Image (cartoon, rainbow, N blue to C red; front, side, top):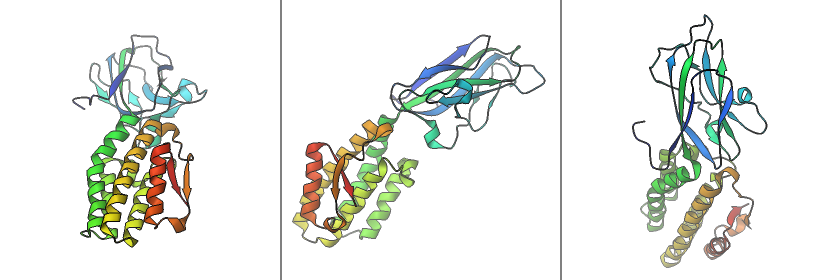
Amino acid sequence: MTQLPKDHFVVPYFLNSGFVDQLFYLAGAPVEVIDVREVHAVAGTDAGAVTLMLRKCTGTQAPASGTALLASTLNMKATANTPQSGALTTTLNDRKLAPGDRLAVDFTGTLTALASVALSVVLRPIAAAVRNYASEAAPALYSAVEKAFGGSFTIAQARTAISTALGAVDPLWSAPQPTNWTDYIDACNRILDCIEVNTHNNDRMRFWRTARGYLNALIDRIALEEASYRGDFGIVMAAAQVTDLNVLEGAMGQCLADNRVLKFQ
């Protein structure tokens, strides 16, 4: 990483000596760990392993009991004054911190010789990341649905284009979390279901204007609340209503007015 995007920030840890397992960051908003670097001025010299693990602590967890955020520990016996990068865990949800979660350093081994350890952790706000993902995907998403409206895409082609567009910008799209993005993807598919059986172009384009406004509002809602997404606070539609263009448009318009989520049975 050569340059940080404007919404990213660095959390530093530094200690000269007297190393112990300890907390060094308390999350005040949902964030994701995206990069970890470490350097030490004097390497450990003990015959056994001397290591450092970055951990996420939740609830009442002590620093050494948190979830490991690296695929493997950082070697504190590595060459002095030579920065090393930590390989992040591939479990995305482990890298996410909710308000109240903490970052901690967990040392192992005999640390007597080790000195001047500097660790930097790059974080990005989850809400900002979600908005970025959505803004990147939106043009392709809208294009796919509009092509389905216009007839240059079949419904099946539109669904494939939507999945491709979303998956290209955020790995979460390919395996949506059950409490957030599923509502968005479900809404996309219900819009396509509806236009598939309604052929009057004027009605469909009017409906699309409302639907697009609803999708934008839902993106904003998820981005603001992702750590505690209120998908349960919504209007429920029966399956038989889904293909009724006027009913679906009315429900989406009501959700826009009330800042609610449309749920489909």
